[in-house]
Amino acid sequence: MEKLLYTEIGPNGGTYKKGDWREFASQTETEVRGFFGEYRFLSNFWPAQVVLDGVDYSSTELAYQAAKWQPTKRDFFLKCTELESIDYNRKNVPDKYSEEEWNLVKTDIMRDLLRQKFDPKINPENYHLLIATGDKYLEERNWWGDLYWGADKNGKGENMLGKILMEIRAELIT
Image (cartoon, rainbow, N blue to C red; front, side, top):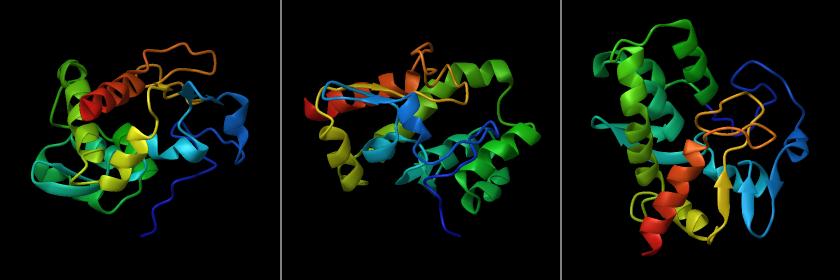
């Protein structure tokens, strides 16, 4: 199954045309607000070898979505696309955590997966790409309304994904 890194349908089902990201993203010498174009590698959809509970996944998104389920019920996430994994979790009720429990652990799970994604021994290409961002501010700007992991076109949101990426980058260069 071929993995798509670009799609005209966003995780919330909204559509856009290739290149529309330039209308709400900003990429300058000091900041990356939107993980598109040359900074697409910062997206959780980007290929990376990551392990969750002893099982290899091909992206942080797939492992993250699988983490919501008991290990014996994760086979779907080994053969689907990233968008399919999100859709699956919207249509089915994950069984590993209650919503309250998930909200307590999701950031640590994401941090662990991202450390693997940018580990110089496991994913050296991703490591070099992250290091090459220097000290740029990183913001996961999006149009699909994810204000916890990212921010909207006006910069409103917690941007936890960007914060974790900057945290990991700082750890890697010290």
